[in-house]
Image 1 (tube, rainbow, N blue to C red):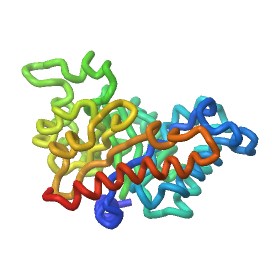
Image 2: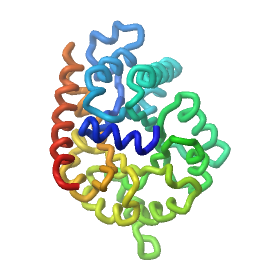
Image 3: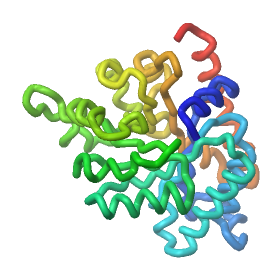
Image 4: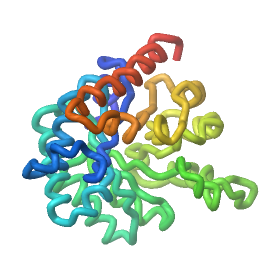
Length: 273
């Protein structure tokens, strides 16, 4: 999916909501455990109930890899279901990969070719040659960790190196890489006060923003400093939506939570950007 197609979907739906499909078998409604594939059954119900309210879905691959080959098959069924039934939806493999070049090439093929996700998250610690193999794929995006929402982000990401915070150095350096126009960045909603500086470095890039909802991030604060003329934000909510109810009405409850966020986003988009 091209960036322009993503922007058009945001404008049409008046939403820049991304729903994280982080499926824990200990948290899904108990009746689904009787299904042949409980993970896929859960995802399908959530997707069918919420697809008109969001523009993206983001399965975190750890929640599938933890269940071995069956979990990977559930992930494959989920992405195939999205591609077939809701091709307008942007898909993100939240895999946080990053390794030496030939290994990164294989990671990129796995997620962007075999599973055919629109994008994949990566970790930049190993530098240019670990990221550029992801950037060669046409109409695909690589979403690089920049400033994350966890407390441990302060261990390294905000430390000053040669007079500049490390996350800023990462952002600046990444702009020089080949096919850097295919980059997006992860910036946590719990770091809303940093968005102004980030936008000075990457004013036109899309930012994937986790941390709204269960982690306490504030949508209005993020939008105040993070929006650009093309919206430029994908706000992710996972637990706050998909686990809205442990009962048989879980999909409807998820849709209600997604609707609350979508309506807030519509109100923001109807105002001056």
